[in-house]
Image 1 (cartoon, one colour):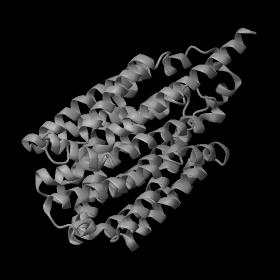
Image 2 (cartoon, helix red, strand yellow):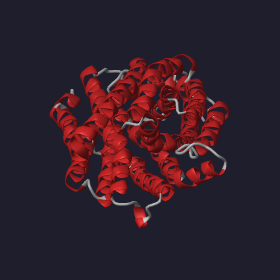
Image 3 (cartoon, one colour):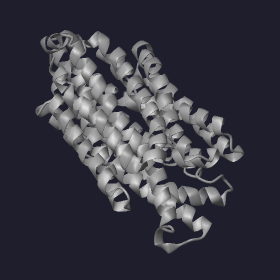
Length: 422
């Protein structure tokens, strides 16, 4: 066997193992962040006493991801993906402890600070999908990226479904309301930290720089930089994410209002039963949304590889339009909200998987890590701002008004799509 063939076999073996480790990390990360996504808005509204401030919870987690994205990308470029991912996970552990403490003493600033810290782990989770492309062959880049994204389905669905058991566990041991599920988050985050620290060897990014075939004919073709297409990819990813995040962030509050107005699920009217019913309703709805976000990502990854990155991005916009129409027309019924959230997740998945693949292939190798960090930072910053505005829009114009506002962003992505071909 020639040295070149041996190197190719090594690359394939390392890539397969890397995708497996990153996928397991995404499962654990999905469990860890499930409580933050589902309960953050409820905690913020409860502690602050204002629904208008509930969007600050999602804004804080996305702000943390935005602040950490570029530094973590730089750390990855210098020290490798393993170092960057473990640092993000360690900071998220500190944030989980901060959120539980904030709920106990009812300190709103500490709550937001803790959620911001959790957001740094979210930035690491986002970086995992790019880590899956470091050693991937160009023709399989969308597939490998989407497999890691898909793995989040398991933890992402399990996390919200643990809200009910977590709340009961929290009450049994005397934890504040809406914090019991953070116990599961804490355990999952510790496991993810240990996984990346111990098992993510050799580092995929550092290894990719050592492979002779990086200078092959295929790689040489990819060295042609397409900055206009890369900028459009960043915009499409950010726009799709802010659409998803703004609507999703306000859905727990909207469902809470619906349940309270209807006397709770099952007709139970006592305060404790009402709180538990709302938690279950929110948990099931968000679990279905997360299943939409990640469950079909391999399908969208294969579509991006075979049908084209830009076409798949536009397919995602079509699904987002369908979601927002459901939110406008039947958003006052639980089933209508659930359908809207599933479609919202599917649209996000198609757009972000294909957009990430487009960004990677449109960037010369020496620029990829930098642009990936900028993309993650921008999408998180936009989502943070969108979540804050979403709280105000929900309070002022209703859930349907929020959907109409989100349609403007989707329209901009479609109108500017010709730039994705340049």
